[in-house]
Image 1 (tube, rainbow, N blue to C red):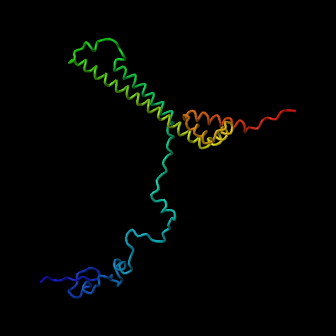
Image 2 (cartoon, rainbow, N blue to C red):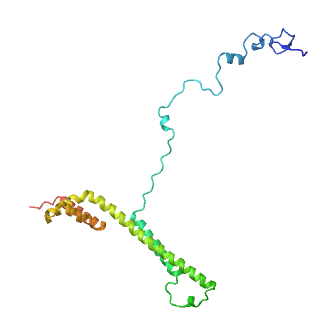
Image 3 (cartoon, one colour):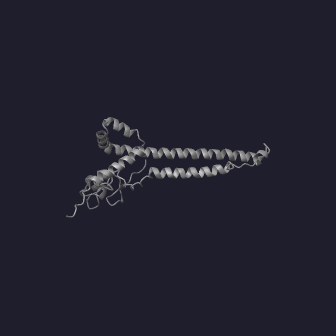
Length: 218
């Protein structure tokens, strides 16, 4: 049977049954005080990392959660005219390259005289097809540029109509004896460019009439 050892309050070996371990004496020091670990357990000592004292709370902290730094203001988009001009510029470049690949309308018969199986003729043919595709792309770009300008003018004319159409229609209807509805229909049948020109002229005349006339000297 294994012998059991006991220790006194100082941690020294003592006879069996009389040591401090047997009666829980090691929970206290030799002077009779509770050891530090036992004192912490008894008083519910704070855990590591626990903050002491009052915690100040920021009422606006919750609102700041998830907020990001404001992004820089986006640069203004290019105007419709600028985009259309850029497309036409690219179309002109494609036309130039395409015509060069297709031979630029040359009249010599050098390609015709080449053998059908020759590499030179195949290269000429492939270049011709590539040039033709470039000219087609150029035409599509010009068409797209025209559509961009048309839609931009249409949008601008619509905005001007919402402000100036009614007074113009009423004034013209009074002079011509036509109904306001007929005049409105006539205005809207005009191209956007003509509508814009008419509205600009109306604004110019209205502002000129509103300016005070200079007084004549006696």
